[in-house]
Image 1: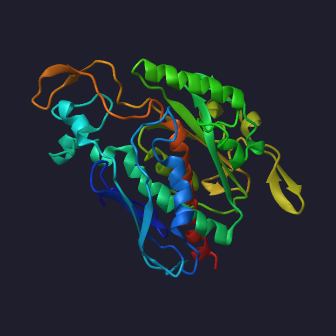
Image 2 (image 1 turned 90 degrees about the vertical axis):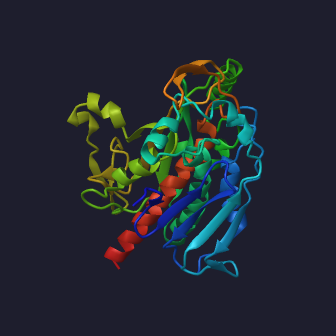
Length: 360
């Protein structure tokens, strides 16, 4: 396997390079007779596309999706669904000045060492533009989830730099998230985050942040023992997103500082169902969904391309310096919200279908 596919029964393969002709995905395993249109997919892609505000990259892309196969008269056929988005505003000349250098923080060096060749135009497959295929496939995954469950996925920016939002996850709604360009439901924190991102941009620098995701109304029993635990697959899905550096569920790393008496979630009967009083585990026990909300967080590093002089090495093995230029996000998290949500939906759709085949 070349590492370009994800999932078992609901399987997604992405393809394309940042400055190639197009990018996209092939979705295999989607059930038949689900109503799928380009407009439905486009709604998710519009949340990811560049040029949304002055704190995102200025690359001018419409990111208009085209369904090439797997759909007839507005309904899925049960056959592979091929999705394509043309690249319209690639400016490869922006990269000419450092095509013979390894950009600090990027995959230039590791790709070249692995394959003996690399696409220096915009980073190729290592570019975040690859995530277009993920988001398009995520829209299909959401359709699968909606056909069988009441699952609701709400994803937002939890922090930027050292600015942490004050959020009651139980009260966050999708409408709140689109009320500001940072996609943070805490309006006061969002303004501070926006200022911090602009400051980093004005200094030719970048800043990182954390995206949080709440998954509501999850059926009990999603997840496989031992290596395909739902928590493990969610971690793989999210950590495969470009620029990710950390992942946690529930209390996450904070659980290492707690006692069992603090972290354990007591069981109780509520309206004829087994529930927990607290949710420190984040909705997953033994790698299997418990029926409580799944709460996860993904940490993103600062974008690697910055307009400050940095030490590096040339492809000829000489020490040198470089100052990158081009159109890049000073902070990736506002647009990464859509990508995290897509990868979560893909993972859940895959596990839902797996669970249905085991318990039909």
